[in-house]
Image (tube, rainbow, N blue to C red; front, side, top):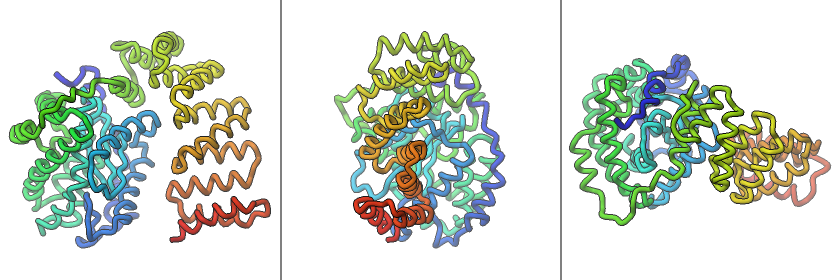
Length: 464
């Protein structure tokens, strides 16, 4: 069985979708108007639909999930999934959009793509994958659905599929496999167009498989990961405890699909990607999204389980041993320093973070951790030095400007704090607030010519 025994209780424990009623209002008119068919924001690239509008719609869906705590926001986990996605995108020719990958905090085996290139992967699916190649195969498949404009094609081929059909289908995808209500939305929403939708889905799945395998192999993943994941889903669907896998409802797998995928694998000298940090990523993901963990498995997993059970001192011994033997391992160092912070050993945590920064200079995650410790110690100027370095290194990272604004607040540098706040709101899409703050900056008697010029440039960009 490819699903680990420890995963089964987690998969059975679904999230409480209390926000469902609000979601229906959101999709049907209150806050998200139900569009006419010719205005429909489809799941894919629509040459006749303004790309900026589509991105905004995808962003609204994304923010809707984020506001309800359904998206994993741990920066280490988020970076892993996005690094995997970027590696796949490197094999995509003529890229016309940005993509955003995110982890959905739900135990069902599912994945979906939103308008604007937002691709969600459920925790349950990630934990079910045995290799990074298998996980990458799902992500490549979802990228392919977006790239191949399958939502638009569905609309073009069937007049029976209305805007309400697509929006209820999307609502069902967002609800996922957590309740029978999600499935009812997907199937009930398509009404008379149900068989047509299923037929199109089968065709689209073949197309997405073809491009997905090309992306996998182009990014030097093992294309067999897709076949292996098909087989994994087949085994899982035969388990009485995992009946009704949501991913299989929206991505049906047949023996023909498996055969065709096998036929498309090109001979390659490249081996499997190897586990690398994938097992550590999965262990930390499970730790971040479960109520309890059995103290078993690898030493890293045992340490995380000890933290989950309130045995931080035991975890500290395990993590210290791992880190001393593997001081260049980012995951060991991060978890060790994080636990040191928790048990109030800030000086030792700072030392570990500094050592990691020597190996991974200007890493944003570790740098922000370090800045927060320095702020707690009242060493604001040292924290500012790190923040300014990150500002130059990551000019589009909103987390950097959030921290920068806070440090300037602590240093009582009002003008600089306001500029950092404006930059933060500009990067988070709060255009009106950013413009207002930049305007206040320009009206300050303390502004110098260089700062005035930079602020005017940003204002001009926002007002285009």
